[in-house]
Image (cartoon, rainbow, N blue to C red; front, side):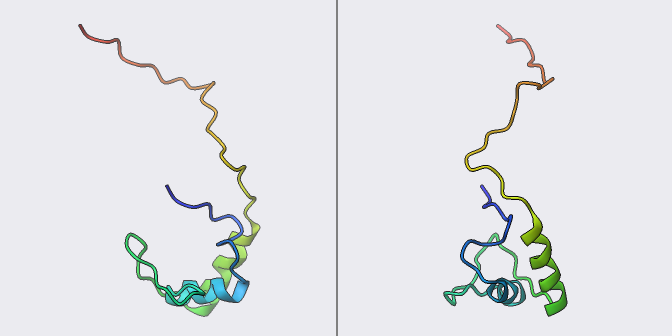
Length: 79
């Protein structure tokens, strides 16, 4: 289960989020661990990603997918 990314990591300032994307280092000075990739963005790219993520709408907490319109059918059980 992946955390929601809309708005960015909770409690991160814009500068902390940019720093995280450039270095993989959290504000607590801990580093990401697998499966998080060891990536290094340049400052312009990191700022563009932060700006984009900050525009994403927050998803409803504990939302469940609407399966009422599902067209998936199950195969009949075999004896």
